[in-house]
Length: 382
Image (tube, rainbow, N blue to C red; front, top):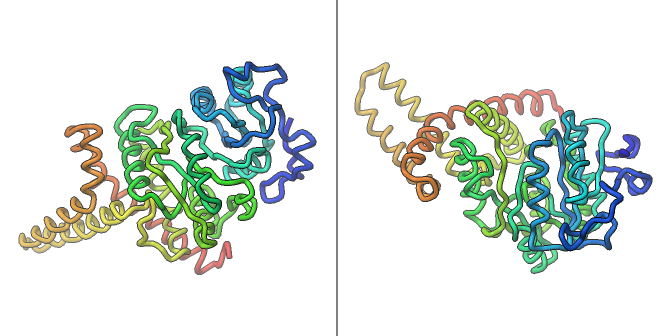
C-alpha cells in the first residue's frame, strides 16, 4: 500500500491520506513484544524513530537491529521508502517479524526532506527521533536523547558520529573522526544533523518540518541546517551532548570521499552565502577546514611566486602558514593520533592538508559561481 501522490502537499501526506492506508503495518502477526519491542499496533509510544530509506537494502538489518537493542523500550519505528529501486522493500518484508515497523511507501522518488516530513506526519510518539538508513544507534542513544529532551521544552537534541565507523578503512575512519571532532567540540551547536535528531512532534509541526526545496534550489545537505537556524532564531536551544552517538556506515573509497566533499562544500557554500555566515564555525564547515583551505590556497600562491621569481625567502611565510594551520587543527590531529596512531595520522595529514583543500576549494568555487549566476543574476529560488 502507498501514500497517494495527491495527498502530498509539499511532500507531506494529510492525516486523511494516512488513515486511508498510506501507513501500513509491516506484519499482521503478533510479535514477541518482550523480545522485540513495541508492535505497530501498540499504544502510543513515547518516541517515533523515523528512518527514510532509498536503496538501503544492504544496511537495513544492521540499522533496525541496533534500534531494537536500545535500552529505551517505549518506541515505534516508522520507515519511509522513497521509491527505492533496489530490493529494500523485499528486505524490509523479511525483517518485519523480528523488527516491527510502520511503512510509508512513496510511488515516486520525492527526496529525503519529503520522506522525513511524511514520516513525522505518520509518527505517533511525542518525540521524533530522526536517523538515517546508514546510521547505527548505540544502546543508550535513544535513552540519552529522551533524557536531554525532558530537561526543557524549547530544545532540539542531536548526536555525533562515533570515532570508529561501522565499516573500517582509511577514508571511512578519517571522515568519522573528523565529524566526531567538529560535532562534539561544542555542546550547543548552530545546527543538529539528521543522522541523529530528536525533536518534539508539536515543535516539528510548528516549524513546518524540513524545507523541500530551498532558496538555493536544493534541499538535501542543508535541510537540517536550515530548520536548526529557524529554531535558533525563534529562541529554541540546540543541544548535542558528547555521549549521544551513532555509528555511520560510509562505504567510502577515495572517489566517494572526494565526491561527498565536493557536493557538501558546493551546497553549504551556496547556503552560507545566502545566509551571510560564510566564516562561521559550523559543524563540518569548521574553522579547521576553512583555515586549512585558506592557508593552503595562500601557500599555493606563494609557491607559484617562488618558482617564478626564485626568491627563497618566500619559504618563511609558507612555513608560518603551515604552522598556523597545524595550530588551528591541533585538537583534531591529536584525536586522530589518539584513536588510530602515528601511521594513520601521517596519512590523514597528507589527505586533510594536501588533497582535501583542493577538493573543498573546488566545490566551494562551483557553489559560489552557481550562487552568483542562479541566485543573484537570474533571481531563481527567490
